Image (tube, rainbow, N blue to C red; front, side, top):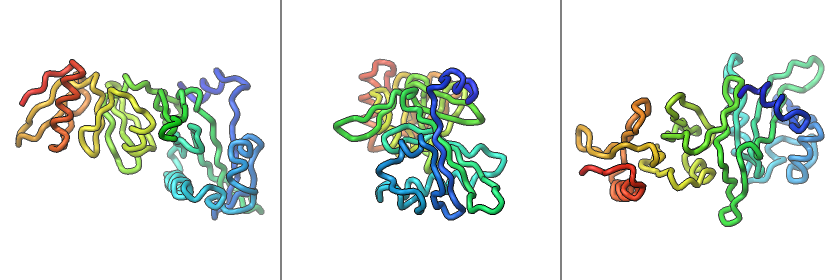
Length: 245
C-alpha cells in the first residue's frame, strides 16, 4: 500500500504530527497534534529535543535522529518505530529557510491501530499483531504467518518472506518482545524462525546443525549448540518437522 493510498483510505481521520528543529536539535515549534502526543512528558518548546524526553528514552531518540540524518539525500528518511507507547512512522526532512535557525522537520503518523498495538500489563511492552514496515513510499503490515525468518542486522532486523526481504528498526530482542507469537523461536543469537515454515533440522558439512525452510528462497540458518535440544523439542511439538540426528 502506498502512502497516498493509505492517506486516501484514512480520509480525514489521519493526523500528522510535525516538529521543527534547529541544526542542534533544538525544538523550535510543534503543531497541535505533536503537542498532544508529546505533552506533558516532553516539557516546553524551546529546549533541546533530547532533554524533552525521559532519561530512559534519550539515547533511543538520539539514535533514531542520527540514523535518519545520516542517510543519503536520495534515500527516504523514514522509519517505523514504537515510542511513547505508540507505533509511529517517523520521517525527517531537511529544511532550507533563509534567515531562520530551522534545519529539520520531523513528521509522524500514528499506526497503532493498523498494527493492533496494545500494552501488555504484565511486561509493560507494546505488543503488535502486525509488523509495520515503510519503504520506498509504501506501507507493509506483515502478519506473523508471512514472516519465515528474522535476522539480526545491527540495530535493524532483516525480515525474510518468500517474496521479499524487509528491514525493521528493532533489535531481535525487541522484536520478540513486540511480537510474542508462539510460532517464533530463537535458534541462534542472530536468528528467529517461524516454526510453521521450517522443513528440517539436521547436520550440514562440519556437523553444525542447520534449520532449513519449506520455501527454497529462504536461506538455511545455523542453530546454536546449546539450543539444539530445545529447538528439536519445539519442532517436534509443532508437528511439522521430524528432526534428524
